[in-house]
Amino acid sequence: MSKGKLEKFAEIGTFPNVFQLPYLFNSEDFSLKGKWHKEYFKNENPIVLELGCGKGEYTVGLAEKFPDKNFIGIDIKGARLWRGSKTAHDNKMNNVAFVRTRIDHIEKIFAPGEVDEIWVTFPDPQPQKTRERKRLTSPVFLKRYANILKPQGIINLKTDNFPLYEYSKEIAQEGGHQILSATDDLYKSIEEGEDAYISRNSELLQIKTYYEKMFLAQGMKICYLSFKIN
Image 1 (tube, rainbow, N blue to C red):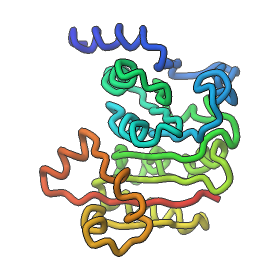
Image 2 (tube, one colour):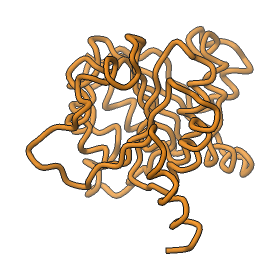
Image 3 (cartoon, one colour):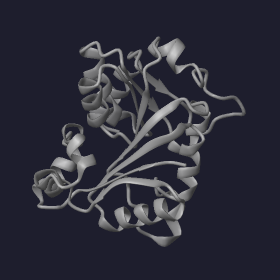
Image 4 (tube, one colour):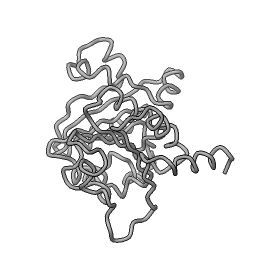
């Protein structure tokens, strides 16, 4: 482990907006489960998650644009979380938190109906068929999300991986979920303005993560899918 990572791990341990949880929980739930509004954010504003948040660019970007909502980024890599958590901490952003844990544990962290919306930004596509269950838009994970989302809660996916986009759209359709928007070229859709949902949300959809900037520089298209979970 490099000195840089060691320093980042040490620093995020001092940030009050970061919760570092074990890889495997015991039988008890996380202490803030069902209490995020009352005990952490101290308001009743909607809670939005970014799963596999990496450096937290989307979490922080959304929080800047929507101070009337609460945002929580989740990732297993502490060195990645350092950037977003430090930005939020240094700028005194009270509507931001980060959780270092596996996304498999999400039902241990949030109570039923505690979350309003979920963003999945540039996840590992897990292309091997044998790893389908590990895709963050697989039926296994959608069931977990349904258990913490409010009724008709929204799930958003941004990805550079067309097969993952197609797979996710198919899973959403098979599950009977209401698709709000689906495009295999997000920025072309924004430019053309033919998708009303994308046009209404174009400002937040143009927040770019480190990986998205890299993919766009390589000339890759960005896919976007949004649907309401049943």
